[in-house]
Image 1: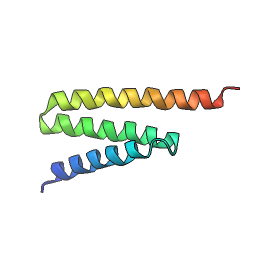
Image 2 (image 1 turned 180 degrees about the horizontal axis):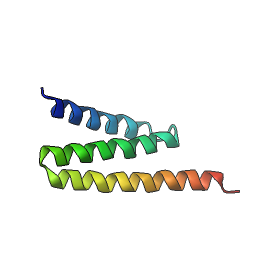
Image 3 (image 1 turned 45 degrees about the vertical axis):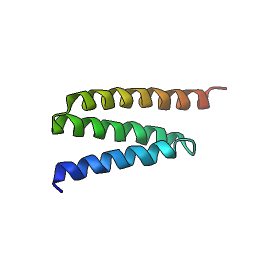
Length: 76
């Protein structure tokens, strides 16, 4: 396995683990967003730009969810 493949494996594994643990802490939602960003980078580096684009969108969606959880937790 080359370095790019290992990077992709790490990114997708991190996405899976963080997604499974999202209910435990809002920080796993943020970690999921970061893992999606890594998946997006992997997709673009691999040459699969549609995968990279979709993962970038998922990263933004997850960031928005994290921001909403953080925002609503702090409100009275």
